[in-house]
Length: 458
Ligand SMILES: NC(=O)C1=CN([C@@H]2O[C@H](COP(=O)(O)OP(=O)(O)OC[C@H]3O[C@@H](n4cnc5c(N)ncnc54)[C@H](OP(=O)(O)O)[C@@H]3O)[C@@H](O)[C@H]2O)[C@@H](O)CC1
Ligand SMILES: [K+]
Image 1 (cartoon, protein in one colour):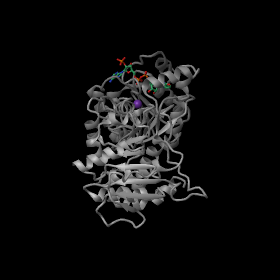
Image 2: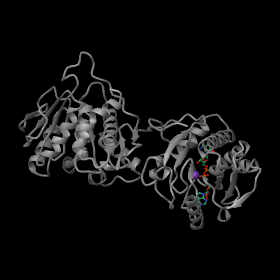
Image 3: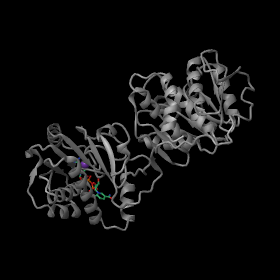
Image 4: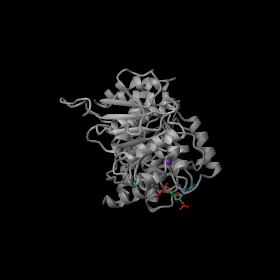
């Protein structure tokens, strides 16, 4: 049973391909899955009675195999089914279960509920009486565990096809799926752990790994650690937050055109001028936090786009940007929109959150950080990282400014890519929020960054 950080994420179709490519026959895979599920249930169920709900497909098949293994291990277990099994594999698994099978509507609750109704084959919402039984049994259970996925969520989009009571634990078979990470499904999964069933998972999507940061090299100096320029605008507090966060990572932070005095002394200030960005030592420019919507903001964005610098484009600048302008630039750009800004930037891009982020990155040539409780980072290559953790206290003014500054500082650093910089920034941002704790304000995030950076190994 493995935590999911850094693991490859597979869609339902990619899971089927991986299964076929594994060279292991399907019955053996189901036996492995069922045995691994039973082992977890046995260990965390504390010997209490288990009720296994089996659906008609292979998710139900996993349920029958797990029930048989639990019974063999001496755990009291009952099985309730939605209907007869409909696949050969599920029929085989059902035949291996020596006990009775009750209709779900008649099943009485048990302390441990194992949901093996539907997995990657769910094609529509569950019938209402089934939803009602599932809720009634779950409410009376002490522990609900979902096999592969909570029954009722769409594997690839995380959409909720029917109401789900919520599991404490979801045992993902072989690999995490998008629904384990995307809203609204993710919180209903509870803790997600992967059971290895001997499938090699390959795709361009993975769960955001724990950030891995190195301490500065022995011979580092402030410029070799990275110089980041933050362009200020109408709301100086926002760019000050971005610069303060950047200063925790970069060797040198330049705040350009800011009217505020309330800054750490370590941040160097420069007046705005058309040639303010003509400094070859600048490794990345952050533009957008507090920039404003006016002509001056537009001129600043034009100057940043005309420069050779790597860019982080956030906040107000995303309202002024024509993403087509990024195509001709040689240096990397990172866009950090929330859903509203994304819709404004890419009004014609539709699909699941993963599809939209990936399409926008491909079209613009920029790395896109589509922010939210289920942040997605997509590179123009098609590679995608899905954030696994979220701290709801991050929904506070200035939080995005801190992320933009942090992203710029990491992008300005040595030996990095836009995808790596954005990924580490998102991880550190969440970790800083976890450390800052409840009732945090954005300023607290910058103060918590040293501890978050230490957690990332630096
Ligand atoms: N891939 C692997 O490597 C491994 C996969 N394994 C396991 O297999 C699972 C996938 O199995 P699966 O493809 O049989 O799909 P599953 O989710 O059991 O259900 C499909 C059936 O349900 C039906 N149906 C759908 N929606 C419905 C609804 N609302 N209400 C009623 N019926 C509905 C649907 O019918 P249809 O849509 O055709 O009408 C079809 O009959 C996977 O999650 C994992 O647990 C492991 O064993 C080991 C290795
Ligand atoms: K399930």
